Image (cartoon, rainbow, N blue to C red; front, side):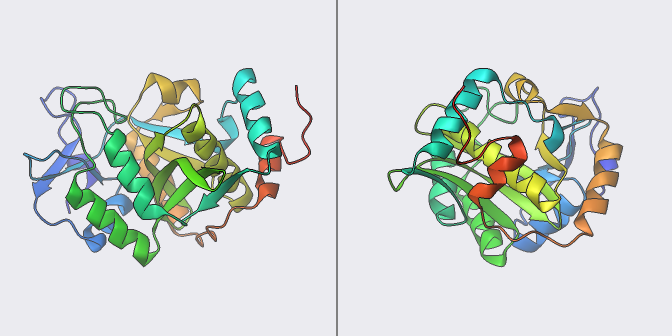
Length: 246
């Protein structure tokens, strides 16, 4: 796998492209993320590897909870029919993310076009989940999976991938849970890859790729967290089961 700084530049027709090939395995996936590189391609393409510059990241201390969403979170946390789970239904989460991924020609969550969660991607992330470095954060209501996201975790470096919602705000609730978990676990940054207005509204910012890779390497050397969610983690966001309604 080439290094991220060899990616095509902003003046090319594919800014951030690092390499193309057919090797898509958990080992290759781990190597790529460790270098600040991620896969993204559609059905008609070879496996394409990317590293964007600048890089969109969310500092967990800068996560924005707007007033209306805070009400939604408090209602969710206070409702015994609602819960956050981690890694209990990974296959369903990535399947739902793939189903919700836009068709070719529509803007996707990576800020470009095309469906990227192709069957090969679902398979390799599933294998990586079994190996313990890909995780799901799930929003459940009445014992039904209604939203969630999946991410890569190497040490304490977290790389967000995709999310889905079957109801309003439930993927955002999963993201808030990931932020709360991260703060409780000593994770300080979540990689968001590319800039979108939605991510910006939640507090994510662009930083130089070189700075991102430097920080990521440092975080990867730390002990990974235990991917279990406790309702007590909501206190990291100033919320909790006994939070008063506003």
